[in-house]
Length: 184
Image 1: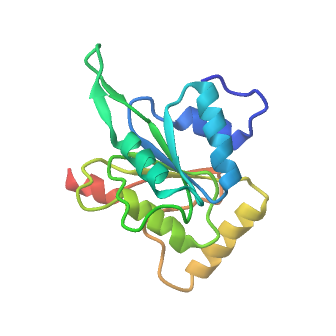
Image 2: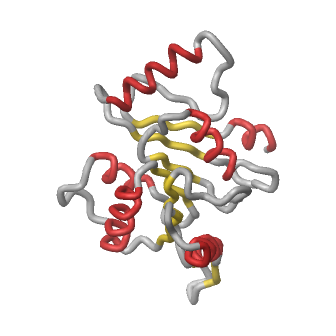
């Protein structure tokens, strides 16, 4: 995909980071962001499906099934019906398992850290055979960075977050799933 064209640095980074041969999931809290990502992915030729609030049940089920489908192409490589599944926080069905994903992207930190943990757990479940990488995009010197700083202070007085690690030095953070590495 061509970068730039008036896209935010988050969207540009996301387009750069999405793997071309693995399924991934993008989480966001905003319906507007879901619709925007759908338009950007369409423009860039990135196959995708989306789950969002107020979506009817059959459309949501179709989006999930489309994302899970794959076939062997004429060149012998695996072809995915939808490479990326875009999910609005709160829209995912109870018990949804996304173990087909190897990469998770959060377009912004969620207000409630527990929701991020739940999203991560959807990909990192029993049956996951791949390492799961999670990346959270946030803007430095913003409400997002203050939220992460507040979490850091709050967590220093209680149990530590073990699933997704944030680094206050960079504007893009990455964490490799340690549990999958232990299995090797």
